[in-house]
Every structure is written in C-alpha cells, then in structure tokens.
Image (cartoon, rainbow, N blue to C red; front, side, top):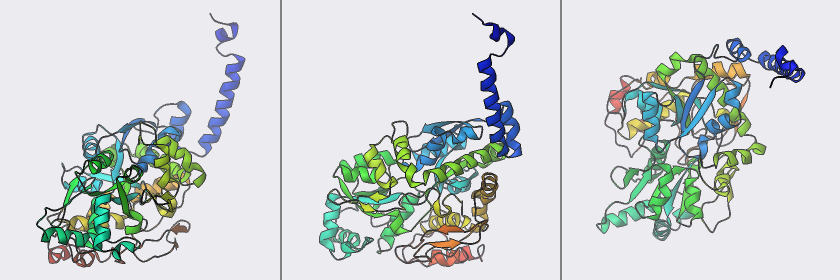
Length: 469
C-alpha cells in the first residue's frame, strides 16, 4: 500500500532524513581529498578503483588494526567494504596474497621482502606502506626446561632481561651426555620470531642451526605442542605466551621488547601489481589504518579493542588473556604477579606505523646472517623496492598526521624516549636498545652482518661489500 506522500516521491520524514544526510555529507566531504569526493557524494566507486576487499589475518593480538578498522567503520569512512578472513598459517597468507585470493594481509615484516626475492616461496613482488605495530612477541619455555636452566646457572637466571647463558649450559650438558638436540618452534622462516629467538640464543654462543632444532608451527598450535612435549619452547606473538602461562605449562623467559626495544613486528602487505592497479584504493586503506591505529593507542580505548579481537572470528581467546599485554601488563609465570609493560603492544606511538627502510634493511641483514639469501644483492635497492614510505607519506598527509621526512634511523642508540625532529612535526620516539647492547647503523650494513660471532653466512662479507659499499 502506498501513501499520498510516497506517490509524490518524498515523504516529510524522507525529506528531513535526506536533508540531514546532505548536511552531514557536506561536512564529511569538506575534510576529504578531491579524489574521493565524487565517490562519497554519489555513493559509487568514483575515484576508488576497487571497493570490495578481503584482507587476511592470523589470530594474534597484532591483527587488531585490520579488525578494528573493519568493525569500527574506519574502512567504510573511506569508501571501502572490507571482509576480514582468518587464515590458518603464514604460508596461507603468503600464498593467498600471491595468487590474488586476498587483496592484502597482516604480514610478518620480513614476508614482503621474502616474497619479492623468492626466498622460500614463489617470487612475487610485494610491498608494504604501513607498519602494523611494534613489539608483541615473547619466548616461552616448558616448566621442565626452565627448571633445568635454573639448576644449570641460577645466577644467569636472575639477570633481567634473561639471557640464554643458562640454556647454553643445558645444551652443553646434553651434548656431553649424547642426547639429541632440543626442539624449539617459531612461526615462519622469515618471521621476526625466527630472528628474535636466534638473536637471543646466538648472543650466548648457541648456534641455532647446529645446537638446537628450530621448527615452524602456526601460532594457535604452539600451546598444544608444548603440552604434548613436541617442543621445549617457542617464540610467538600474543596471546599464545600468556595462554601457556595461564595453563601452567610454561614460563615466559623474555619478551621481544626486551630483546630489542620497540622492534618492528607486522606490516600490511599487498602485491606490487595490486598496488599499481588500485593506487587510490590502496591509499584509502592506509588512511583508514592510520586513523584506526591512532584511536587504538589511546589507553581508554584498549579494552574495547580487546573485546573486539578476542571474538571467535578473530583471535578466539579469553578476554582476560588477551587483555594482559594489550592493556600494558605481562605475566611471566603462573605464580607471579603481572609486571607493567606499557609498550608491549604499540600501534601508533613512536612512529609505529611508518615503514622504515632501515627496518627492511635490518631484516635483510638477518636473512644473510642465517643463510636464507645465497647471492649478493644491493640491500638498499631491495629494501626501497619493498618498503614504501612514499605511499605512507601521501596517506598521512591526506589525514593530517605527522610523518618522518627521513627513511632511515639507527637502532640501539637510545635508552630513553627521544624526539624525532626530521618530521613534519616533532614525533616522540621510544627507546631502541638491543639487550646485548649491539648497535645497528644502516650506513654500515656489511660491517653489522660481519660483527656477529655466531652466523651461518652463505655469502661472504667481501662479496656483499662489492654491492654495498
């Protein structure tokens, strides 16, 4: 049945609603870049080449910025209709982005580099213009191994942060007794987790390629494998360390923040050809993620973030476990009181979202250190082809956020907070110390690689120097 007003085409209520929408739309458009205005006003794709997108995640707390951008409407604000797809493993993420089954994804910071070079995968140029977070991982060991380490070197175990010196004594004792190497796990060969557990072990003289077995296990399966004694320890992101602690299965030895203060963790990755085909769509996604990250890093919003990502569709873990690291505390052992760790998860502070090319180069140094790249390359050239601060700056400028005007920074030189002045506005930065006090200078890449006593190079330093003078 139709009313007289309906026959005339517009009821009074409809007129008022339309007027309100127009007024609100005008206000919204005033703050929008020109390339998006036609799309927003007409309700069509307009300047956006593609609006229906699927982004992949792994169930970890640091998938949060993608999930929250979808749930809280930040993607919609920029004209994007995004579906979040929970994937089973990092290999799934890599492969689905490579073949175009996913438009983009939550990625390990080293994954776009590895995909571009074909390290352990089909070669597919992949880029990132957005860093998803800093920190977020930890190394957890079984109760049995923890006790063995405590018995082997009680003094070393009192150190904070905990070194691997006691583990070295346990390994040496096993070798003397003719026992097989212990098995540890990490999440992917080019993961930060792999490089972090290797860095921690190697600092105590342990060769992770000879003295232990390092295997790959997807994050959600870590706890079950620790319970089954298939592994004695692992490096993983949250909430899978706290779940083992809460279940009484193990103890966290050291967090990634303690290994390297404010280390880069995950990135938002897309294929290069996708970014070139859909540049406005890509930029809109980065703009949405920037606003989301800024909102998430406000302490008053963290519990809402926790409740969102803890859901079955995303991390699928109890709120009281997820909230631990996300609200600035961390529990290392079942019997201990949670300790304050306010920077365990950083999503926006300290220029956390910026894709530093010096970070990309650090990952390349680790790929060389552990023999994953077997030919000499121009490290800076490779890094510049994968990490794209130019795209980031364009997006940040559109949303009015400050951004660095340089692409590189040293690491290991700041014990306290400091201010980055090479930026459109001063940016407060966090500490960046390595726990072994090793420094990293992106202007001395080959010297940095060569400075480590424990390494598994398949390319000599002299070969690298020819391309990285």
